[in-house]
Image (cartoon, rainbow over all chains, first blue to last red; front, side, top):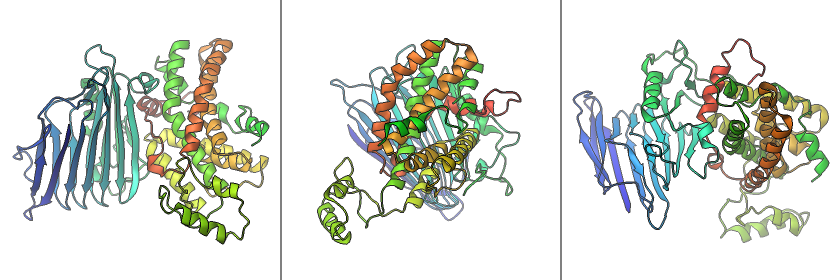
Length: 253
Length: 270
């Protein structure tokens, strides 16, 4: 199945956010959800309109957050990456652009690697100078007591044109020795912008990145709930913007 | 390529401080994740396919940046333009470049490499690329400490070494610089990086757990062909854009390194 979703958020000029494009094809169905909690942000849930991703799927999500806007994107449930017969790889490509003074919160539920799956999720995020990002990625190795298929999350995040995070999280038969490096469930939450400033006291799983105002919170565990709890705790006592806080680069040149 | 020179560079006794680092083994042993041969094997296999593969790729790319002469602009992947550029190259080069030399300018896809980027810029971009792949500040510091120690040795062993990277490059960058200085190529640089990571971690495990050194070396021998495969792949991708190079993430290595850095007493620096 080939499908595409597009989201465009813009500042409405009154301190809020207007969604000028909310488009999706099954199984990518974006639904605007409650913005009463945060009147300045627009929130969208991706509702699974079909099972999947299934082998052979080619899915694309394209997100634009224009300067000054704030978009929150969530999914309503975990994604189950599943095999097809005959076997074929599935891909999900997410591209996001976030403008100056804009915020994107990409907070989906985990992706579960069902036995036999062959799924690649590739994300490329381009942040303008002064953009804010919360970007969560979580993966789970199989359903209960199930050996996982191949699942790979490839992520590139650039800030003002410079790559600040480049990582691939891979589990399954092709990712040799993955269980010793990631555990049965693993996740990261990338914070970019003022709230990524150094947390005090130091939180062990919250690591300041070298190439920009960013921190990566990482967690592994036996299940998705453990990982989510650790990610939330890492982000919990986020300090407000501290102009004296240094990003993690202790040396350049 | 000199095999004996490769042995000199890859020798664990090269005075470059490798013995001070355990490649994450000390922290993994303390956490109880490595306690016998099978758990060591899983760790070494996982480490090789994540950070070991990335280190190999960056060592190969750094070595390549320093072992090819800059040539006029030619876009990688632009196969249509290749014959024209190739003819222009030959004309520009006053016949000094042999047909074989022109052939070596093509990458594994048969397209001309993008050599318009100057070596120093490429090295800086590669060093940035390792920062973007290393979330843990403790691992970044350990990598730069090892890079500095290796460069110190290289400056004395191969005094003609070219180093556009400053005194504290990441370890794989320093490995590429060392290989180029020793007259080796990208594949040997990559092999040195991935094999050194494997043996360093394995020998730390022998010291920390008192494992039988014969069985651990049998394990290294079993994993050696994987090092060859990783190195060959790294060399084939030595000209790829930095963002396209391997970036296998090992969250447990990051978290362990951060915890390890807080210990007051430890046997290894990382």
